[in-house]
Image (cartoon, rainbow, N blue to C red; front, side):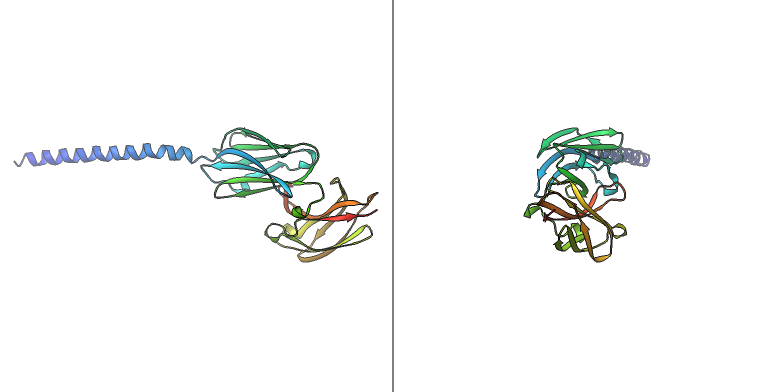
Length: 253
């Protein structure tokens, strides 16, 4: 009986060790799919219309995208094309090619760890691209602003996070007196632009201000027409749009 005790204890110890190994193996196998699904995956592209812009959305699953991982490597959509890159270690891309609202958006893997959204537009009808990242669900948003004078629904009097506001516009001849406010822009720097009915820039003023501001901007056109007065700030990093406010105005020669 005394000799059987150690043998029984040893058998129980061995069974417990085998059981622990089996449980560990099950845990490791169960963890593998969740680790694979944790890779940030660009899974789809959607295009929709808003009054002031066309919105392109890239949907992501399996991870989190940060704004500092995005770069508008070609932000000059006014020439008919733009490009946005997303750099993230281990990123997976499901290639997509969508066309809607006069915009074509192609999603691809440019290089290892870098996804690319290539945007082309029919005609020279866009002026800016603004890039943002939203969470829950995870997505990258590219807003492509129209060049044409804004309809009432497309006027923007207060920018995102109140970065800029337009409080009043007064015209005297071919000069506008523009008043507004600035909030938290890089170096308080922005541009006032006047655009004609085709979206061409016919007046421009560089502004540096903190808080309330008042500036004049002159323009030059040959015939009376609808136009746009806008105040915009562009990214120091890549030149993409950061903030915009805009109003429809009447231009006179």
